[in-house]
Image 1 (cartoon, rainbow, N blue to C red):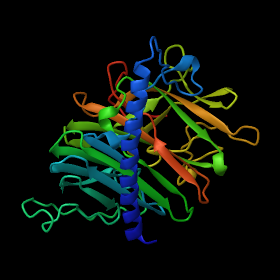
Image 2 (image 1 turned 45 degrees about the vertical axis):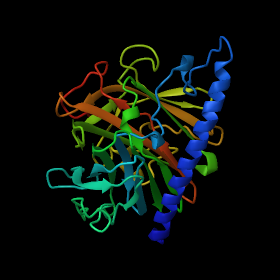
Image 3 (image 1 turned 180 degrees about the vertical axis):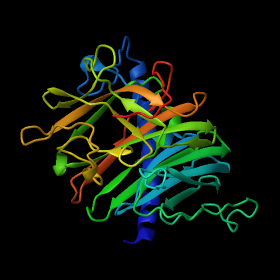
Image 4 (image 1 turned 90 degrees about the vertical axis):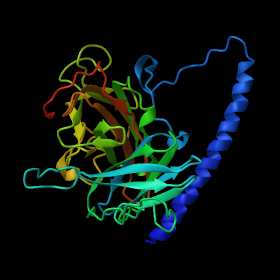
Length: 375
């Protein structure tokens, strides 16, 4: 696999995407101008497919609009991961790059210590850089930026592992960062590619999550990624196995009542309740499978499925998960806590797709606790 060609192709894809976004915005303005002349127009709200009563949940915004923090997923378990950042402003920005390794273990934490490496990087106006997670190279170089204090990227061993990346703005123009990531599976021959999640557009009032899935192109494997972290400073985040989000209670109707359960539904709206589940920065709890019919791509043996039935079958091609937030568990109650997720589906043999899951910030409506969640 020629990573140089892949990196160049990644940059080309982003440039094409930005051009498409410009054209989309022009089309949007034309349509908006037309709509404004129509009297008494009522625009319908966006509803989640399968949700009762048209439940409306805020989605993670496309990061082409520019944010101050980006969150990426990475995976090197027989996979290659590239993640990209672009400075859309006309001035120089300085960013803080943090990489959290879920697969890192210690004697005291055999299920993952969420080890972190970090450094500061510099981007001039309109600059784009692609990082290879297993061969990190700073964008800032003395030749390019003779007046900048360039910091070399660390050289950790991130092979055969997985985790997440946070890139936060330190200085420069606000809302100037856009990004994406690509994960290429060697044995399976498929690719996960999507925009990074932008924190500035998180839905801070989201308490119910809907996660759709199907067996299009023979999808039978999944990567349900859940990332939880504390914001310890405007340019720094912190993650650990004891910082988590719990979904579902032990009883309750899925859409009405106190402490509702996790439910999984087929395409005919027939539902089954599931046990509570949680995500944190530890092995088995960071990347889960959906159920027995579409287990986790890389950790099927861990039995870390969200539900234990088999929704997809010869007579059922699609389904969706209802995941009501139960609580956040965190270290410092004075810090803001965030959740972001990505959903990947693949057939293990050439076809795969990934997209942003819904994202949320802890608020007063979600009761926090200060002990790790347990199922």
